[in-house]
Amino acid sequence: MSSLSGPEAQDALFAAGTASQVPESLARATSRLQFPPSYVLVGVYRLFTDKLLYVPAWQKCQHGVQRGAVVGLIWAFLSFGIQKKYVEVFLANSPRVTGLSNDTMFGYNIPFNVHTYAAVLLLGSQITYILRFFLSRNIHVARERAWDQTVASRGKGPDFWLPYVEEWAVPPRVAVDTWTNRMQQRWLGGIGVFIIKNVLLVPFNFYPGVGIVVAAWFKGLGTAHNLHKQYFAAKKMNDKEIAVFMEERKWDYRTFGFTAALLEGLPIVGLIFTISNRVGAAMWAHDLEKRQHFVAASRSRNPAR
Image 1 (tube, rainbow, N blue to C red):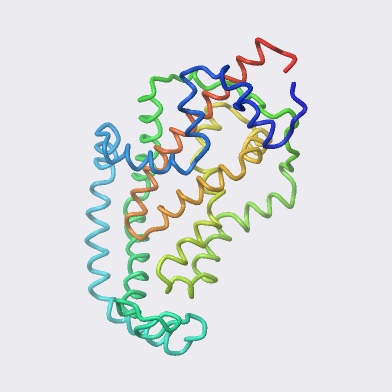
Image 2 (image 1 turned 90 degrees about the horizontal axis):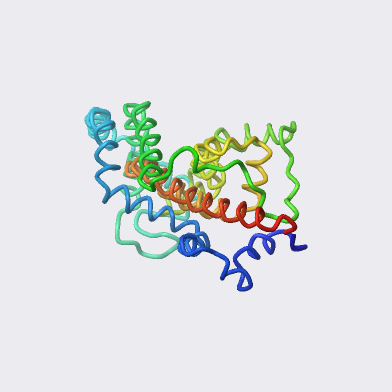
C-alpha cells in the first residue's frame, strides 16, 4: 500500500498514475466528488423536476402547509406593526451594535427601509416555526421518502451498500465516546447552534444575509452528518467508522453542510430545501459508495496495496 497519508492518500486513488484504472462508470462520479456542494444544487434540480420526488412530498405536506399558511398569515396581520415598532426602538437604542439607521448601513444608502426589512425577516422566521409545527412528522416522512426514492432511481438495492472500506493508508485518529466529545455534541450541537442563532447572532440578522451565513457555518458539519445518517446506517457503520470517514472528508462535509444549511436557513422556503438536501445527500452517498466499491475491488486484486 502507498506510504502516503492524509489527503494525499485519498487523492492518490484518482491521481494521474491511477486514472486509467478508474472504470468509465466511475469517471463522472469522480469528477462530481471534487466539489461536494454541487450535490446540493443537484438535489434542488431533481426535486423540482422529478415528479416521483415532488409529487409524493407535496401530497404528504400539503395539508400542513395550508394550515400553517393560514395561521402564519393571521399572525403576520396581527403582529407586523408591533414587531416593526419593536425593531425601530431596538435600532434607535443600539446603532453601534447594528451599524444601521433608518435608511443607511454603515453610512451607505440602501434601497429599502431597514426597519421594514428587519421586521419582515423576523416575521419570516416566526412563520417558518409555525409551518414547521404544522408539518411536524409529515415533513420528516417526506424527507425519508425523498431519500429512498432517489436511491431507488439509481437502480440500487440494499446489497449495493458495502461494509465500510478504509481508503486511507494511515487513517486519522479520532476520539469517540469520550466525555469531552459527548459535551461537544450536546452543547455545541443543536443547543449550541440554537443559542448562537437566536441570541448571539441577533444583531447580525439585521444585515441582509449575514446572520444566515454565520449560522450556516456553525451548523455545517452537523447538518452534513444528519443528512448522511441513512448512508451510514445502510453501511452499518459504527461510531468510530463514521468519525474516521467524516474526518477524512472533513472539508467536503463542511462545504456540503454549509451550503445545505445556508439554503435550509432561508425563511419559509428553507423548509423545501430540507427535502431537496436529502435528495442531494443521497446522490452524494451513491457516488461515495461507488468509490468504496472501486477501492474494495482494487484491494481484492492487489492485497499488498
